[in-house]
Length: 370
Ligand code: IPM
Ligand code: MG
Image (cartoon, rainbow, N blue to C red; front, side):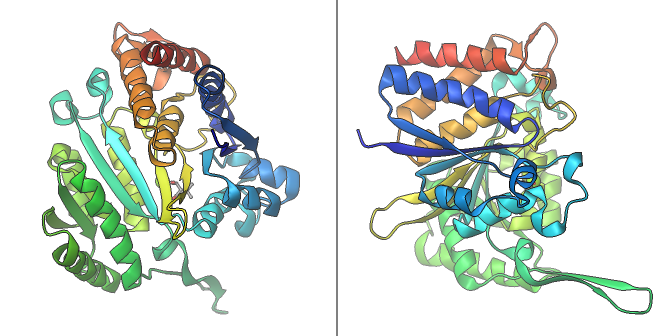
């Protein structure tokens, strides 16, 4: 089997602890299944800043660009609150997204049956929830220029961020959403603020035209993003696929995460366009949760989002659908058995730490693949 290269960037806070649990799964797959994963590892975020004075080194950027897939943990923490803006921990993640051209961010929010009671919403509202947020990831206000703070000289400063989208960016992200909807319940809801923003007007137009031209079989609806946020907590099961811009996607995916019980449950995949020659997409997989500095290093972190991100990697980068299904099933089974980390602890359940949760999932995964 040809080598499959994985570049690991555990990052800061709970990132390394969560990544260790994925490493165990990869070792098992290499040893017992002959999966042929070749691992390399680098630094990103605060840990890269401490070592190299930047949020990611050029050497590690080159490795990320060359790898079949990047597995990313988390970045940031109070230790780096005062470092210069250009080299803040988040800059490493943003550079990876931009330079690898990972324009499509897939954030599935699935409520495992066993966790319906862990959600802050009523169990009947979230039981069986299965939505997919498709977030545009390389454009919008995150990267638009100018992006400045100017001293106006009169005791005032002016801060500018620029929200900007070109037709092709909206076309390609909405195409991803429509394609994915066809593999699900065949419905897309597009969210923007066309009542206030020109970028929202164009977004709405381009999504509508793309739908008409190529995806008329998919049910399309539009919502203003604020109303969309409200509907997500009022009746989340009305949605199948949500497609939205970078900033709204950031916010709405945190909201969606909480519907599933905990931010510690949400994986994500960030994908580029298929290569014209090889058909391969550049890809980075990361849990939606952050570095959680308050619990870092204590062995308390929930590794499920990181493990589920690796399941997405198996599915989208390596086409290992059966293995991805098995890993997701293993997570569900462990939850059914009442094994919980602190963030999703429920009555009558058994609380475990990061390592024990990882071990339990690996044991189920092995049992399923035997
Ligand atoms: C996310 C995070 C990032 C973002 C941060 C860490 C830059 O919140 O992936 O949702 O804002 O995109
Ligand atoms: Mg976020």
